[in-house]
Length: 128
Image (cartoon, rainbow, N blue to C red; front, side, top):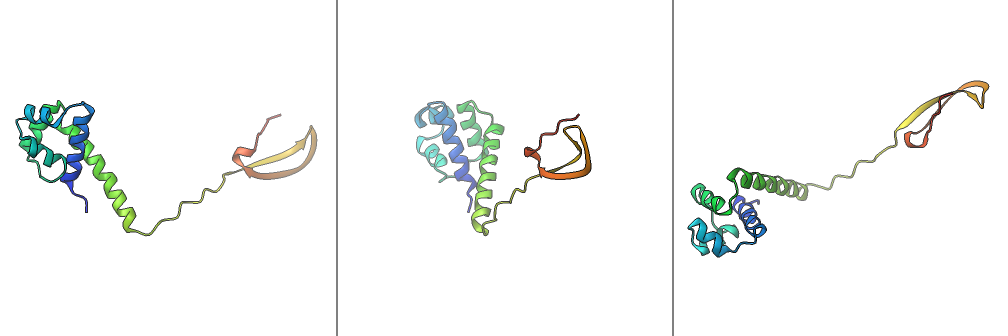
């Protein structure tokens, strides 16, 4: 089961660590207890919108940016969860694309019209 509070906590921790800041610094700036901020980062506590706003202000990060990153993480987690729950899907087989080339002469000598089918990447056509 995907827990939004864990994803949110992970994103908050990454934001803080990217800035090279400690829990103590951010908790002081956000006026939140160190222990509570730690529990939020570990996904053990649900953060209210007021608390998230204070933490975002302390990190100088827009809440919309934070939520966008959480949304991206949630999308990946949902994909991973659904992939794990279903049977493996075989990878699609890539079949080569074929080009048709009509030949009416070879080295300037007229011939019977012949059509050749070959993989697209293997055919070099030079117009006469």
